[in-house]
Amino acid sequence: MPLNIDHEELSALSEDVFSAIDDVLDTTGPGVARLALTSISMLNFLETTITKMTAAEISAMEELRRLQRIEVQAAQERKERINKTIDAAVQTLVVDVSKAVCKFKHGVREVVRRLEKREEKGEEVDQKLRDLREIQEHSYLVPVERLPPGHNYWAFQLLGFCQTLKDERSGITRMMGYNW
Image (tube, rainbow, N blue to C red; front, side, top):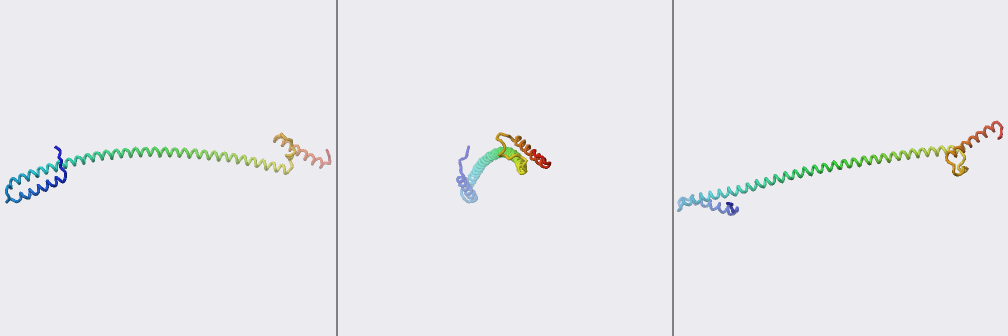
């Protein structure tokens, strides 16, 4: 049978029991034996009530502890799952960043390679221009204004070669005194 007694009622009952015990100690009063029996039965009732209340509170505390252990275990499992998820996300992020860095490095190398090729071609063109200017300064080639339109580089070279031969031949004939 469940007890419906709160702490205030239990305190009042305890005070009644202790006042009855005080009355029992006064042996000169009437009905001491009956009062003693009443006090003993009240003490037994009080003991039973306190024991039942304590047992109910202990079982409630044990149930609460059991629920707390379950919650703690569930929280630890959630924490482990979250940590695993975070670790996986970090690993994926590291892999993605590494791939992006590798692609970027490859792209930079490709751009550098292209720039080096352009620089080499530019140096070749600059060298050809320097050679052409040097040749033009020494009059080995026919000036560009004299070339008929539509002739390509080799025709330009051939004309320059012919001019060189003509210059050399005229120089040799003059040295020998011949005029052709």
